[in-house]
Each structure stands twice: as C-alpha cells, then as structure tokens.
Image (cartoon, rainbow, N blue to C red; front, top):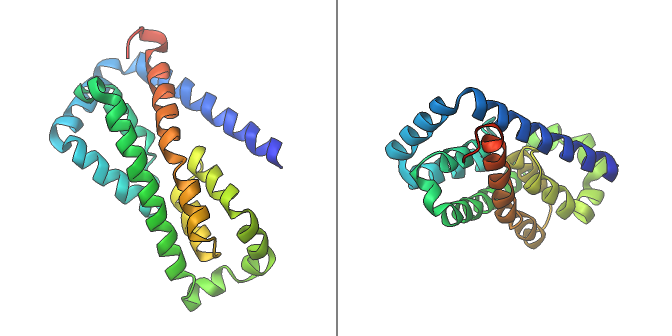
Length: 189
C-alpha cells in the first residue's frame, strides 16, 4: 500500500513537472503577463487570502498555481519569504479545515454519510491519521479533503498540527519543481 502511494506521488510530481515545462514552453509570454497581472492586482496579501480560502474549504483550485504566479512575477525576487508565508498560511488553513471537520462530524447528516466508513476505519484513522494527513500535506492529494476527513474521524489536534507543518517544506519543494518545469525549455525562471 505504501509503495503504491509513493509510486502515485512520484508519477504526480513528474506529471506536474512535465505540465509546467509544456506550459512554460508554449505559453511563456502569456504566463508572464498573467502572473504579473495577478500579482499587481491582488498583491501578495490577495494571493495569501486565496490560499487560505481554497485550502480551508474543499475547492478544485491547486495551490501550485499561486507558486507559478510568484515564479513569473516581480514577487520572484523575494520568493523564499513569499513561499514560506504561503506554506504557513496553508498549514493554518489545514487546521481550520480540521476544525470544520470536527464540527461537521457531530452533525447527523455527516454521521450517516461517514457511518460505515467510520465504523470500519475510525480506530485505524485515529492511530495512523497523522500519516494520512501527512500524505495530504505533502503530495498533490486534495489537502482540504484530507483535513476535513481527519476532523470528522477524530484525529487529534497535535498530530494534525504536526502533519500540517509539512506544508511549509512542501511549498518550497513544489516551488522548485514549478520553476524547474517552467524553465526546462526556455532556460529561465
């Protein structure tokens, strides 16, 4: 099972790199113009607010798009600061998502929805929930879904915090992947 998860993660990271390389090659001027426009209109605070919203709630918006905006705009000059702050914001969003899941887990609708799954997996999830959240925090899996599920199934606060903190190095790693992918064909970040 772990080998399968690692293989899927590796495939997803390679696919992300290839996608970024293809986008960087085909749409270089558009990427730079779009990233600059977003950075100028929203600023870094706007990017952080978007991330807080999308990583707290279940949305189909991948945070790696924001890393692309940083890489292709004036924000790239101070990227270590901005990427680190986004990692902290994402970790905080995961904790908020966990809290929402804890609250929802007490509602009858969600108790019915997770009923059989909860009966079969709750003990396992409480024991190994840290690892499930850690997988969601470090891989392209939907982080918000992982956090909500951890809350519904009763993963403890401190294991949740520890797993969410891995969002910070994940953002640095994925920023490197985004920059490497975009610059693969055009020779610049």
